[in-house]
Length: 309
Image (cartoon, rainbow, N blue to C red; front, side):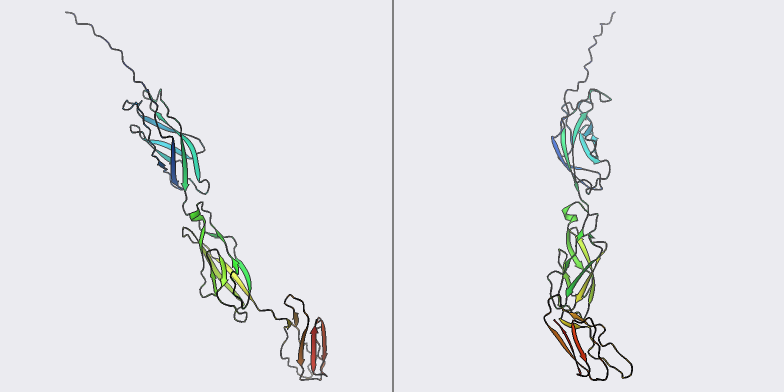
């Protein structure tokens, strides 16, 4: 008995009919010195060929723009879920933002991705979030100023610190502080130093204080800056630098009475200055410094006149 002939049906090859689909744009955020990008919306590619093997699966995400330090990886080919990662550590101080193109690829009609299809191109914009890496640094290694005694100043001088972080939060200086205790000075948040009381040249002629700074992320300067403030006496026109009393012992020879005497004009025109010096001994000649504008010296008169106009 003969068997009926077998009918062979032609095999129908799997056909990759559809392109993968992704969003048209993505916005991502990555914190510097980390490697995972948080994308909005999440990176997911869909394919209408699913659940057909290969044709309905996602095999790759390609990035166009070799200068972008990122790569996209497939986490699940069936669901089309992917992730964007940094190939190396990103630095906000070097570059704050990145923009590039991404495209999804399905797995084609069989192993090896033959006859694979690509999605449309989507724009990805990445923002790099700052980390408070840097501490404030003062522009000058030290500061110096001078004040006149007896005055209250709104601002004696201004110190300034900078910060190399890229974001306003961490790069701006939010506060300054005088770390030296018990000083008659105060500082505002802009670095202006003022005196809180009238200073006296006779009490203290110089002050040394230390100032520090904080950025708006509360990171303190690694090194405080020294500030020197000199106190100047109030200028008084007239003859300066002469001793009120000069003792002389007879027989010891000549003696210079006023070796440090000078005429202080306080920077303005001098109309008249006259000083009277009484001599208690008249048996020697009194000599006045020759650089005076006008002088008269005579112990015989018991009075020495010094004048300048």
